[in-house]
Amino acid sequence: MKEMIINDVLLRMQEHITREQLCILEKVLLTVLYTVEVVKMETALSTDFDDNTYMLDYIRLNMQKRDLSDKTIEQYMRTANNFLDVVHKNLRHVEPTDIEFYLNEYAKGHGGKPNSPTTINNERSFLSAVFIWLRRCNFVSQNPVESVPKKKAPKKPIDYLEGTEVEILRASCGTDTIQERRERAVMEFLLSTGARVGEVPDVKIEEINFTTGILLLYGHKDREYREVYISDAARVHIKRYLEMRTDNSPYLFVSVRGETKPIKECAIRAVLRKIRDKSELTRRIYPHLMRKTMASRLRQDGNHLEDIAEILGHANCRVTQEFYAAPNSQELRRIHKRSIA
Image 1 (cartoon, rainbow, N blue to C red):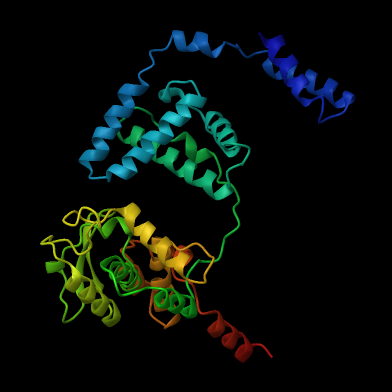
Image 2 (image 1 turned 90 degrees about the horizontal axis):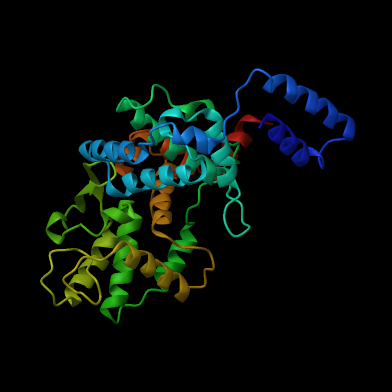
């Protein structure tokens, strides 16, 4: 078995190192593996009770008890099962090298398109969360993911809409049909509240104070209510949309076909794509872009990151600063010019 492994390593390395280096590598492998017992993975598994399904079901139940969202739980379970499809091993015995092997395989992506370092780091975070829950439930004593460093990923600038781009989108919205009025109302609502796309469908008309524009918005991610504010423009277009509705649904935005059913997340994304398609913009327009645009405007107007984070429903200001609220580049240039001759 050891000889087969050594030969396999040498075969894989012969294109990357010289013949002399291959000889040195062979001697090193012989020395390192001399005191190691090598067993085929299939043999090891046959002597080890594989209770992965039980452990995953158990931590899923505990996640539900802690009120994690269904979407988050499914992401963790999907990552765990993808990991087990690659690393055929009992979760109790996973080592850092197994994590590294999986992430290297995951980096290859699908269809010839490799995953980016950011995507790989996200997968690493999901996998780490799985092992954190396994540790909480006393299945493992430590998290093997902690020993595996993150991939170095270049930090991209925060994506948000400039003022002229917002106006271009507004100008492309019509007012003749209820669908057109809904488009403008949805866009203005997202721009003024910074709501997550998953928080919008459950909003009800009676929850909005149309005098002050205040809305207590329930965040599915943190399971808490937070106060958000609907701008004057948004209130005007929401009222115009509601005036044309003939249903008695309590929901603020309803399905075009279902009428009484609340709008779905996919429909909100479709609404923004439709607005973009009618405009002269070619860039991608999506719900989270509206959230970033609102946060960036607040920061560029001189508001504190703590206040912006509270409006967004972030527990950590660092998240707000790094991923949502872009600084005012013109102000930074003025500061530089004022201080540097």
